[in-house]
Image (cartoon, rainbow, N blue to C red; front, side, top):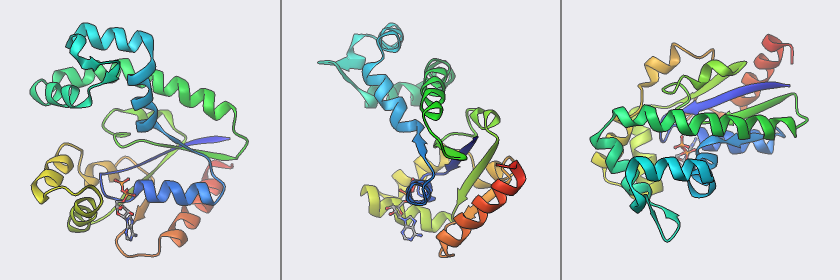
Length: 195
Ligand code: ADP
């Protein structure tokens, strides 16, 4: 079994590709959802977050994501500190999950796979890319956000160009047939990785 990272900027269509992979029988682990679960439930992580942000980071036991977002925006250095706490836990969960799968390829979907350096831990990575204008329109429609709010989120992530330098497999989701590209990438991965 090979572990493959799957990423793409907000609105690129990485969740759409992940769902298609699942339909094709390839298990997908959703790192961002797992991180959210850990924030809500992991006792040691909760203690660490309370130590850093104060007890208001949980209200009636519910993790206050907006407080984290505001604090990270005001103090970007904290980002690395939080990542160092959360990522090893997500990785541990992924390894446990992967140990229960039987497919020859399993995928780990993560929004900031490249930004965190996590991409280095995979046998290969697949990046979904899409033109800026299409991404803006899709996210505005999906999340009901203003153009400026979408642009702010996009600017918080690395550019496609930077990530394209670090990945061997690219899916372009700008009107090109998606399923055909996914099938081609799977076939290429199996050949290249001998999976
Ligand atoms: P991401 O997970 O990268 O943020 P999504 O997969 O959620 O992106 O896609 C963003 C939005 O665009 C979603 O509402 C999705 O249904 C839509 N979308 C994705 N790919 C396509 C496509 N090829 N054609 C039309 N709509 C698409």
